[in-house]
Image (tube, rainbow, N blue to C red; front, side, top):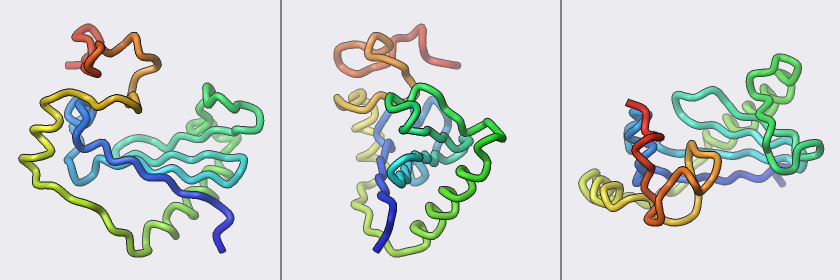
Length: 132
């Protein structure tokens, strides 16, 4: 029995994937949570780390703080162990995902934005927030 939970989010059809130059096949976030610590892995980004005991709203990312390197490495090892096991992934063609991305973000998770004021009512990023 595992003593942690895993959550994946596939953001292949989301505009931020294009903005940061991630290939569709790598556009996944994986979260590991052990009851206190939350580790988030995103390709081409440094890991995120949150202490939900002291920061339940996840406002203070500890991933770059060397003080928490032991927790970060422990959770990273759990992620690596989990990722080596077989998982199914529903797939769509590259063209189908691009069409979904062109329609704008679906409601729900905002990737790379701090609040809903940074996107319009259809989930598209306001032009002033897009990095060139």
